[in-house]
Length: 386
Image (cartoon, rainbow, N blue to C red; front, side, top):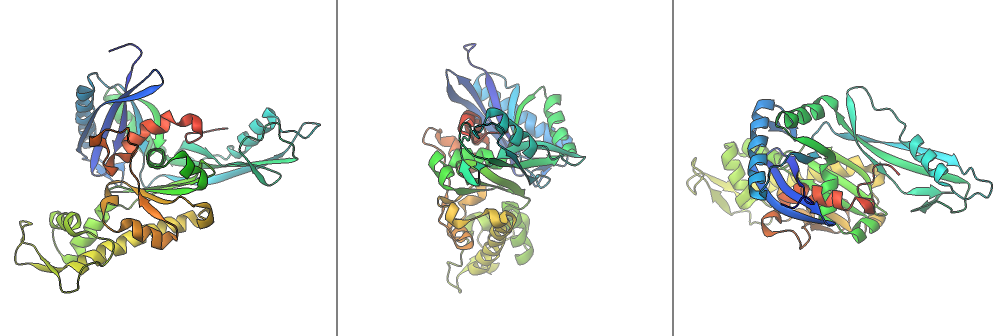
Protein backbone atom coordinates (compact mmCIF):
# COMPACT_ATOMS: atom_id res chain seq x y z
CA UNK A 1 0.00 0.00 0.00
CA UNK A 2 1.20 3.51 -0.79
CA UNK A 3 2.81 5.37 2.07
CA UNK A 4 0.39 8.21 1.33
CA UNK A 5 -2.37 6.08 2.80
CA UNK A 6 -2.80 5.15 6.42
CA UNK A 7 -5.44 2.73 7.64
CA UNK A 8 -7.53 4.12 10.45
CA UNK A 9 -10.56 2.53 12.03
CA UNK A 10 -13.92 4.01 12.93
CA UNK A 11 -15.18 2.17 16.01
CA UNK A 12 -18.63 2.09 17.55
CA UNK A 13 -19.08 0.01 20.71
CA UNK A 14 -22.84 -0.42 20.68
CA UNK A 15 -25.20 -2.24 23.01
CA UNK A 16 -26.12 -4.88 20.43
CA UNK A 17 -23.12 -4.90 18.10
CA UNK A 18 -19.58 -3.63 17.77
CA UNK A 19 -18.86 -2.13 14.36
CA UNK A 20 -15.55 -1.20 12.80
CA UNK A 21 -14.94 0.41 9.42
CA UNK A 22 -11.38 0.66 8.11
CA UNK A 23 -10.54 3.52 5.82
CA UNK A 24 -7.73 5.70 4.57
CA UNK A 25 -7.36 9.40 3.82
CA UNK A 26 -5.12 10.16 0.88
CA UNK A 27 -5.01 12.80 -1.81
CA UNK A 28 -7.83 14.65 -0.11
CA UNK A 29 -10.11 11.63 -0.45
CA UNK A 30 -11.49 9.03 1.93
CA UNK A 31 -11.48 5.40 0.82
CA UNK A 32 -13.46 2.76 2.73
CA UNK A 33 -11.36 -0.39 2.59
CA UNK A 34 -13.03 -2.87 4.92
CA UNK A 35 -15.53 -3.36 7.72
CA UNK A 36 -16.63 -5.85 10.33
CA UNK A 37 -19.43 -6.35 12.83
CA UNK A 38 -19.61 -8.66 15.85
CA UNK A 39 -22.18 -9.19 18.61
CA UNK A 40 -21.51 -6.88 21.52
CA UNK A 41 -20.72 -8.55 24.83
CA UNK A 42 -20.24 -6.74 28.12
CA UNK A 43 -22.00 -3.54 27.01
CA UNK A 44 -25.23 -2.09 28.41
CA UNK A 45 -26.93 1.13 27.28
CA UNK A 46 -23.84 2.10 25.31
CA UNK A 47 -21.49 1.68 28.29
CA UNK A 48 -18.96 -1.09 28.93
CA UNK A 49 -19.93 -3.05 32.06
CA UNK A 50 -17.66 -6.10 31.60
CA UNK A 51 -14.19 -5.10 30.43
CA UNK A 52 -12.87 -8.58 29.67
CA UNK A 53 -15.90 -9.61 27.61
CA UNK A 54 -16.01 -6.30 25.75
CA UNK A 55 -12.27 -6.42 25.05
CA UNK A 56 -12.58 -9.77 23.30
CA UNK A 57 -15.52 -8.59 21.18
CA UNK A 58 -13.60 -5.46 20.18
CA UNK A 59 -10.46 -7.45 19.42
CA UNK A 60 -12.31 -9.80 17.08
CA UNK A 61 -14.04 -6.95 15.27
CA UNK A 62 -10.87 -4.88 14.84
CA UNK A 63 -8.94 -7.91 13.58
CA UNK A 64 -11.61 -8.84 11.04
CA UNK A 65 -11.93 -5.25 9.77
CA UNK A 66 -8.16 -5.02 9.34
CA UNK A 67 -8.09 -8.27 7.41
CA UNK A 68 -10.86 -6.98 5.13
CA UNK A 69 -9.03 -3.68 4.68
CA UNK A 70 -5.79 -5.40 3.78
CA UNK A 71 -3.71 -3.89 6.60
CA UNK A 72 -3.78 -3.82 10.41
CA UNK A 73 -5.72 -1.07 12.15
CA UNK A 74 -3.80 0.63 14.96
CA UNK A 75 -5.58 4.01 15.24
CA UNK A 76 -9.33 4.56 15.69
CA UNK A 77 -11.91 7.31 15.76
CA UNK A 78 -14.05 6.29 18.74
CA UNK A 79 -17.77 7.04 18.91
CA UNK A 80 -18.95 8.24 22.32
CA UNK A 81 -22.40 7.40 23.63
CA UNK A 82 -23.99 6.18 26.84
CA UNK A 83 -26.22 7.44 29.61
CA UNK A 84 -23.28 9.07 31.42
CA UNK A 85 -22.95 11.71 28.69
CA UNK A 86 -24.55 15.12 29.24
CA UNK A 87 -23.99 18.76 28.40
CA UNK A 88 -24.35 22.34 29.58
CA UNK A 89 -24.34 25.80 28.04
CA UNK A 90 -21.55 28.29 28.67
CA UNK A 91 -22.05 31.86 27.43
CA UNK A 92 -19.94 35.02 27.43
CA UNK A 93 -19.93 38.54 26.07
CA UNK A 94 -17.22 41.17 25.60
CA UNK A 95 -17.14 44.78 24.53
CA UNK A 96 -15.46 45.30 21.17
CA UNK A 97 -12.04 46.67 22.09
CA UNK A 98 -10.90 48.52 18.97
CA UNK A 99 -11.18 52.34 18.64
CA UNK A 100 -13.15 52.01 15.39
CA UNK A 101 -15.53 49.39 16.91
CA UNK A 102 -14.56 46.74 14.38
CA UNK A 103 -14.36 43.25 15.84
CA UNK A 104 -10.78 42.01 16.02
CA UNK A 105 -9.39 38.47 16.12
CA UNK A 106 -8.42 39.23 19.73
CA UNK A 107 -12.05 40.03 20.61
CA UNK A 108 -13.17 36.73 19.08
CA UNK A 109 -10.50 34.77 20.88
CA UNK A 110 -11.35 36.46 24.19
CA UNK A 111 -15.10 35.80 24.06
CA UNK A 112 -14.58 32.19 22.98
CA UNK A 113 -12.18 31.51 25.84
CA UNK A 114 -14.54 33.07 28.36
CA UNK A 115 -17.49 31.02 27.11
CA UNK A 116 -15.48 27.79 27.41
CA UNK A 117 -14.03 28.67 30.81
CA UNK A 118 -16.70 26.88 32.88
CA UNK A 119 -15.06 24.14 34.87
CA UNK A 120 -16.31 20.59 34.55
CA UNK A 121 -17.00 18.85 37.83
CA UNK A 122 -14.51 16.39 39.24
CA UNK A 123 -14.97 12.92 37.80
CA UNK A 124 -16.13 14.24 34.42
CA UNK A 125 -14.16 14.76 31.20
CA UNK A 126 -14.69 17.02 28.20
CA UNK A 127 -15.77 15.36 24.96
CA UNK A 128 -16.74 18.33 22.76
CA UNK A 129 -17.22 22.09 22.76
CA UNK A 130 -19.96 22.93 20.25
CA UNK A 131 -19.88 26.62 19.35
CA UNK A 132 -23.13 28.38 18.63
CA UNK A 133 -23.32 31.32 16.20
CA UNK A 134 -21.74 34.62 17.27
CA UNK A 135 -24.01 37.52 18.12
CA UNK A 136 -22.89 41.06 17.38
CA UNK A 137 -25.14 43.63 19.02
CA UNK A 138 -27.76 40.91 19.27
CA UNK A 139 -27.64 39.87 15.61
CA UNK A 140 -26.24 36.57 14.32
CA UNK A 141 -22.83 36.84 12.63
CA UNK A 142 -21.19 33.80 11.06
CA UNK A 143 -17.79 35.51 11.05
CA UNK A 144 -17.82 38.77 13.01
CA UNK A 145 -14.18 39.72 12.40
CA UNK A 146 -13.91 43.29 11.00
CA UNK A 147 -17.65 43.88 11.35
CA UNK A 148 -18.67 47.03 13.20
CA UNK A 149 -20.39 46.69 16.56
CA UNK A 150 -20.14 47.17 20.30
CA UNK A 151 -20.99 43.88 22.03
CA UNK A 152 -19.82 40.43 20.91
CA UNK A 153 -21.48 37.30 22.37
CA UNK A 154 -21.08 33.56 21.91
CA UNK A 155 -22.24 30.35 23.54
CA UNK A 156 -20.79 26.85 23.68
CA UNK A 157 -22.70 23.66 24.35
CA UNK A 158 -20.16 21.60 26.27
CA UNK A 159 -20.48 17.81 26.11
CA UNK A 160 -18.92 15.79 28.90
CA UNK A 161 -18.95 12.25 30.25
CA UNK A 162 -17.75 10.08 33.10
CA UNK A 163 -13.95 10.15 33.28
CA UNK A 164 -13.90 6.64 34.69
CA UNK A 165 -16.03 5.18 31.91
CA UNK A 166 -14.25 7.01 29.10
CA UNK A 167 -10.84 6.10 30.51
CA UNK A 168 -11.84 2.46 30.94
CA UNK A 169 -12.77 2.23 27.26
CA UNK A 170 -9.56 3.91 26.14
CA UNK A 171 -7.53 1.58 28.36
CA UNK A 172 -9.16 -1.46 26.75
CA UNK A 173 -8.15 -0.14 23.34
CA UNK A 174 -4.61 0.54 24.53
CA UNK A 175 -4.40 -3.02 25.85
CA UNK A 176 -5.27 -4.13 22.32
CA UNK A 177 -2.49 -1.99 20.86
CA UNK A 178 -4.87 0.67 19.55
CA UNK A 179 -4.47 4.43 19.79
CA UNK A 180 -7.55 6.65 19.99
CA UNK A 181 -7.07 9.36 17.36
CA UNK A 182 -10.21 11.23 18.42
CA UNK A 183 -13.33 10.95 20.59
CA UNK A 184 -16.45 11.91 18.65
CA UNK A 185 -20.00 12.12 19.93
CA UNK A 186 -22.10 9.45 18.23
CA UNK A 187 -24.93 11.84 17.42
CA UNK A 188 -22.62 14.27 15.65
CA UNK A 189 -21.10 11.44 13.63
CA UNK A 190 -24.55 10.30 12.54
CA UNK A 191 -25.61 13.87 11.85
CA UNK A 192 -22.67 14.41 9.52
CA UNK A 193 -23.73 11.27 7.68
CA UNK A 194 -27.48 11.74 7.22
CA UNK A 195 -27.91 15.50 6.77
CA UNK A 196 -26.78 17.92 4.11
CA UNK A 197 -25.05 21.26 4.57
CA UNK A 198 -28.29 22.98 3.56
CA UNK A 199 -30.36 20.99 6.09
CA UNK A 200 -27.97 21.91 8.87
CA UNK A 201 -28.15 25.54 7.81
CA UNK A 202 -31.94 25.69 7.84
CA UNK A 203 -32.20 23.63 11.04
CA UNK A 204 -32.56 19.91 11.66
CA UNK A 205 -32.84 17.47 14.55
CA UNK A 206 -31.08 14.11 14.12
CA UNK A 207 -32.23 11.16 16.22
CA UNK A 208 -30.03 8.06 16.11
CA UNK A 209 -31.96 5.28 17.85
CA UNK A 210 -29.79 2.26 18.53
CA UNK A 211 -30.35 -0.79 20.70
CA UNK A 212 -29.47 0.79 24.04
CA UNK A 213 -29.36 4.56 23.46
CA UNK A 214 -30.96 7.40 21.52
CA UNK A 215 -28.40 10.01 20.48
CA UNK A 216 -29.71 13.39 19.41
CA UNK A 217 -28.17 16.53 17.94
CA UNK A 218 -29.96 19.74 17.03
CA UNK A 219 -28.53 21.85 14.19
CA UNK A 220 -29.12 25.55 13.72
CA UNK A 221 -27.49 27.99 11.30
CA UNK A 222 -25.24 25.21 10.00
CA UNK A 223 -23.80 24.26 13.38
CA UNK A 224 -24.45 21.67 16.07
CA UNK A 225 -26.44 23.68 18.61
CA UNK A 226 -27.26 21.11 21.31
CA UNK A 227 -26.68 17.38 21.71
CA UNK A 228 -27.17 14.59 24.22
CA UNK A 229 -27.83 10.92 24.85
CA UNK A 230 -30.93 9.18 26.17
CA UNK A 231 -30.18 5.72 27.65
CA UNK A 232 -33.20 4.15 25.96
CA UNK A 233 -33.36 2.39 22.59
CA UNK A 234 -34.65 -0.57 20.64
CA UNK A 235 -33.79 -3.14 23.31
CA UNK A 236 -36.25 -1.41 25.62
CA UNK A 237 -39.02 -2.01 23.08
CA UNK A 238 -38.10 -5.69 23.18
CA UNK A 239 -38.15 -5.67 26.97
CA UNK A 240 -41.56 -3.97 27.03
CA UNK A 241 -42.97 -6.66 24.74
CA UNK A 242 -41.42 -9.39 26.88
CA UNK A 243 -42.94 -8.02 30.08
CA UNK A 244 -46.26 -6.94 28.61
CA UNK A 245 -46.95 -10.23 26.82
CA UNK A 246 -45.10 -12.45 29.30
CA UNK A 247 -42.91 -14.01 26.66
CA UNK A 248 -39.17 -14.65 26.39
CA UNK A 249 -36.86 -11.91 25.13
CA UNK A 250 -36.11 -13.97 22.00
CA UNK A 251 -39.83 -14.17 21.18
CA UNK A 252 -40.26 -10.48 21.88
CA UNK A 253 -37.40 -9.59 19.53
CA UNK A 254 -38.93 -11.78 16.84
CA UNK A 255 -42.31 -10.07 17.27
CA UNK A 256 -40.70 -6.62 17.10
CA UNK A 257 -38.83 -7.39 13.92
CA UNK A 258 -41.72 -9.19 12.27
CA UNK A 259 -44.69 -7.07 13.32
CA UNK A 260 -43.30 -3.93 14.93
CA UNK A 261 -45.13 -0.76 13.95
CA UNK A 262 -45.38 2.68 15.52
CA UNK A 263 -49.09 3.05 14.82
CA UNK A 264 -52.08 0.79 15.42
CA UNK A 265 -52.35 -0.06 11.75
CA UNK A 266 -53.82 -3.56 12.11
CA UNK A 267 -57.39 -4.65 12.60
CA UNK A 268 -58.40 -5.27 16.21
CA UNK A 269 -59.30 -8.89 15.54
CA UNK A 270 -56.09 -9.80 13.77
CA UNK A 271 -53.92 -12.20 15.79
CA UNK A 272 -50.38 -13.52 15.68
CA UNK A 273 -49.59 -17.01 16.93
CA UNK A 274 -46.32 -18.06 18.50
CA UNK A 275 -45.00 -21.31 19.91
CA UNK A 276 -42.21 -21.37 22.46
CA UNK A 277 -39.78 -22.11 19.59
CA UNK A 278 -40.76 -18.79 17.92
CA UNK A 279 -42.66 -20.51 15.09
CA UNK A 280 -46.27 -19.83 14.27
CA UNK A 281 -48.41 -21.87 16.63
CA UNK A 282 -51.04 -22.01 19.34
CA UNK A 283 -50.21 -18.94 21.44
CA UNK A 284 -52.28 -16.00 20.11
CA UNK A 285 -51.62 -12.28 20.60
CA UNK A 286 -53.62 -9.40 19.09
CA UNK A 287 -51.28 -7.63 16.69
CA UNK A 288 -52.67 -4.28 17.88
CA UNK A 289 -51.39 -5.12 21.36
CA UNK A 290 -47.90 -5.57 19.96
CA UNK A 291 -48.17 -2.33 18.01
CA UNK A 292 -49.58 -0.49 21.03
CA UNK A 293 -46.69 -1.49 23.29
CA UNK A 294 -44.12 -0.43 20.70
CA UNK A 295 -45.81 2.85 19.79
CA UNK A 296 -46.16 3.85 23.44
CA UNK A 297 -42.43 3.42 24.11
CA UNK A 298 -41.35 5.13 20.86
CA UNK A 299 -43.61 8.10 21.57
CA UNK A 300 -42.14 8.30 25.07
CA UNK A 301 -38.60 8.42 23.65
CA UNK A 302 -39.53 11.29 21.34
CA UNK A 303 -41.32 13.19 24.09
CA UNK A 304 -38.36 12.87 26.47
CA UNK A 305 -35.99 14.18 23.80
CA UNK A 306 -38.35 17.08 23.12
CA UNK A 307 -38.46 17.89 26.83
CA UNK A 308 -34.67 17.78 27.08
CA UNK A 309 -34.34 20.15 24.13
CA UNK A 310 -36.71 22.58 25.83
CA UNK A 311 -36.76 26.08 24.39
CA UNK A 312 -33.82 25.24 22.12
CA UNK A 313 -36.19 23.34 19.83
CA UNK A 314 -38.07 25.90 17.76
CA UNK A 315 -40.16 24.39 14.93
CA UNK A 316 -39.82 27.57 12.87
CA UNK A 317 -36.02 27.23 13.04
CA UNK A 318 -36.04 23.50 12.31
CA UNK A 319 -37.39 23.67 8.80
CA UNK A 320 -35.44 20.63 7.58
CA UNK A 321 -37.33 18.68 10.22
CA UNK A 322 -36.44 15.46 12.00
CA UNK A 323 -34.00 12.96 10.52
CA UNK A 324 -34.18 9.51 12.13
CA UNK A 325 -31.48 6.87 11.77
CA UNK A 326 -30.00 3.93 13.67
CA UNK A 327 -31.18 0.32 13.70
CA UNK A 328 -34.51 1.09 15.37
CA UNK A 329 -35.37 3.63 12.65
CA UNK A 330 -36.42 0.67 10.49
CA UNK A 331 -39.68 0.36 12.47
CA UNK A 332 -42.58 1.20 10.14
CA UNK A 333 -44.39 4.41 11.03
CA UNK A 334 -41.57 5.86 13.14
CA UNK A 335 -41.11 8.97 10.98
CA UNK A 336 -44.82 9.77 11.14
CA UNK A 337 -44.80 9.47 14.92
CA UNK A 338 -41.79 11.81 15.15
CA UNK A 339 -43.63 14.33 12.97
CA UNK A 340 -46.67 14.11 15.25
CA UNK A 341 -44.64 14.65 18.44
CA UNK A 342 -42.33 17.43 17.22
CA UNK A 343 -44.75 19.16 14.85
CA UNK A 344 -42.31 19.32 11.93
CA UNK A 345 -41.71 17.02 8.93
CA UNK A 346 -39.72 13.86 9.61
CA UNK A 347 -37.89 11.41 7.39
CA UNK A 348 -35.56 8.44 7.62
CA UNK A 349 -31.89 9.34 7.24
CA UNK A 350 -29.78 7.58 4.66
CA UNK A 351 -26.13 7.78 3.67
CA UNK A 352 -24.73 9.59 0.64
CA UNK A 353 -24.74 7.64 -2.61
CA UNK A 354 -20.97 7.27 -2.35
CA UNK A 355 -21.31 4.82 0.56
CA UNK A 356 -21.04 1.18 -0.51
CA UNK A 357 -24.09 -1.04 -0.23
CA UNK A 358 -23.15 -3.16 2.83
CA UNK A 359 -22.76 0.05 4.84
CA UNK A 360 -25.97 1.72 3.72
CA UNK A 361 -28.01 0.16 6.53
CA UNK A 362 -29.07 2.86 9.05
CA UNK A 363 -27.41 0.92 11.86
CA UNK A 364 -24.07 1.94 10.28
CA UNK A 365 -24.81 5.68 10.34
CA UNK A 366 -22.62 6.37 13.36
CA UNK A 367 -19.58 4.29 12.48
CA UNK A 368 -19.41 5.44 8.85
CA UNK A 369 -20.37 8.92 9.99
CA UNK A 370 -17.19 9.11 12.07
CA UNK A 371 -15.24 9.43 8.83
CA UNK A 372 -17.67 11.95 7.37
CA UNK A 373 -17.52 14.02 10.55
CA UNK A 374 -13.73 14.22 10.35
CA UNK A 375 -13.80 14.84 6.60
CA UNK A 376 -16.30 17.71 6.98
CA UNK A 377 -14.60 19.33 9.97
CA UNK A 378 -13.70 22.41 7.97
CA UNK A 379 -17.38 23.15 7.38
CA UNK A 380 -18.00 23.78 11.06
CA UNK A 381 -19.62 20.46 11.95
CA UNK A 382 -16.61 19.40 13.95
CA UNK A 383 -15.71 22.83 15.29
CA UNK A 384 -14.52 22.42 18.85
CA UNK A 385 -13.31 25.94 19.49
CA UNK A 386 -13.53 29.10 17.47
